[in-house]
Every structure is written in C-alpha cells, then in structure tokens.
Image (tube, rainbow, N blue to C red; front, side, top):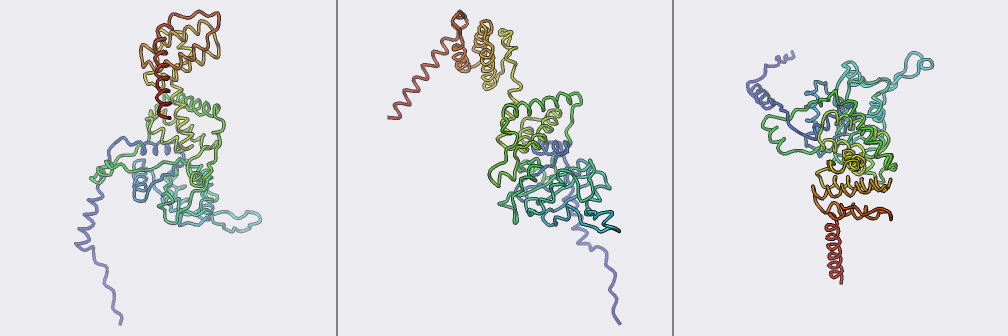
Length: 411
C-alpha cells in the first residue's frame, strides 16, 4: 500500500525570518533629486519617443526602469529580445476558416495582448544588443509603428530598451542602422553618491516633467527655428549615415531623428530643463557632431539682433560671456558689410567702444580690424576710433612679438 505524502508544512520559522529580513531589505523610499540622465529619460518618455539605455552590466538600467514604471504608475512588461524568435514580434501565422477569403492573420504574443487590454504600460525591451539581426529586423515595426502582428499598441504604451556595449554583451551584435535610428540613445552611468544613498534606503524619484502651459507655443516655435535654422545652413546634416558599423548602431542624423530632436527641444524648453539635459537628448538623437553644432546654434539664437545693437549703441546690452560677446560683435560687423552705410559704420565703432569699456579689450581687436577695412573713401574717420587705436596697436605688437619668438624657436 503506497504511503501518502503529508501535506506541505507551513513556512518554517527559519524561512519566515528570512522572508522578514528580505522584506526589510526591500523597504526603501524615494526622494526628489536632480539627476540629468533620469530627467532626460523621463522627458523622452513624456514625448512618447522610444529610448535606448546604453550601459555596462550591473549598472542599474533595469532597476531604473522598474522605478520609473512605479513612479509613473505604469504596468511594466519586460521582454528579453534575445530569447525570442522574429515571429514573436512580427506575429505568428494562424490559419482561419477560409484563408482564401480571410487571409492568414498574424497572432500577437500574450504580452502584447495584455498591454492592449490594459491600455497603458511601459514596454521594456531588455538585452537589445544580444538580439540577432533577424530579431532586430522584426523589431523595426514594433518600435516605430507600435504594431505586433495585426495588433496596434495603444497610445498609452511607452517603449524603453536597454543594451550593453558589444564589448561587454554576451554574444553581442551591433544594432542595425534602421533600428538604431528609431531610438533616443542615452548613455547610462552610475553616480556613486546616488548608489551609496540608494543602498542606504533612499533612491532618486523619477517624475514626469512639468510642462508650462503658457510656454507651449513658444517652445514649439523655438524648436522649429533651431532645427530648421541649422539644417538650412548645413544641408549635409539632414541625412548622414556613419561610415563605420559601430557608429551606425548609435545615434546619427536623418529626417526621422531630426524630427525626434525637434520634439525633444520643444519638451525640454516647455519644461525649463537644464542645458545638461538638453545636451544628453540632442546628442543621443542625432549624434555628438551634429548635436554639438545644434547646441552651438541654440546659443547664437539667444544673441542680440545686430540691427538692434546698431540702432542704439549707447544703450546696447552686450552678452557677458566672452564667446557670446565676440559672436555678437562679429555679427554687427557682418551686418555693416552686408549693407554698408556711413551711419551704420559709425554706429558699429561706437558699439566697439562700448564693448571696450564693459568687457575684455582683446575681444574688440578682430572686429575693429575688420570694420576698418570696410571704410569707403568719402567716409570721415569717427572720433570713436581714437579709443580703440591703442588696443589694436598693442595687439599687433603682441602678434609680431609672438611671431619673432616662434621664428627663433624654429631655428
């Protein structure tokens, strides 16, 4: 006669104590804390743009996404891309009653059905850099069109992915250029202060940015002027596919990524985000080179209008920062060159005197030298030049001395 197995005993005292200890270890709290990379992530999520976090293993990418989902009250769905087949993202063919009439529908996976039923959520595509090329190709439609088989994900679903650099990924692959160009790439690095404070029980809190309703039209106008202004001056930046495989797997400029950049600038402007946050987002969308050019052009957009400066030089408010002041003065000289006129030429000299009186003297040397070459024969020399003659002369003597030193050193 077989012996019956006794019913499972209740949790032993030892396991109960272990469970209690683990509960205490998991009992952590959050606090508001400035964190540029976390703010950049939440801005991109708010803008409904797919985000890809790059970082070494164990650096906290998954934990950050889990905390983000909790803070935003979004159900988290994690999909390990590398352990799925392409059909898991493109849909499994299901034969119906009459394929000739109804076709063969592509059935979505269960996790996609759950997201649609919930109507909202955070879809986390983990280990993206270990997904083989066939799986990456199947992900294209999911990331861009939010479609899986015949199923359309609802607008309330946000997509965030994570990847390790190929050098530290298990059987890693470079991302294909079409897939890479669909993401905002953020480099995820640890802050030792955040880690120490988090291990002590308090982690930073991820919150959606607070957009100022009164700034929305202004933010959109600013973003459009910034991107369109740069691309009008630098048309080769509209689409530039990198030449190396590694760079093609990161951010690079295309009409698609410039559109994402425009959206991110508008969101960052409406949220009043810092320059550091904007830099992470712009460089993570179109790459370092084009991104830095765009950031520089944003600085120039804040420069005073040369015509306003020429209209009233005595009351001109010149930038305090040296490089901005230099750019403003160069802009004034360029404006006089474009439309030469005795009155405008005199006003430019008056402005250079004001710049000399309120800032570093060396900043007026190049604009003064250039402005002097624009004089026409019937123009009298303005008295303002007397104030600048000493500075220009001293600069020229310094240049000649430096040339002599360089010549002696080359002997």
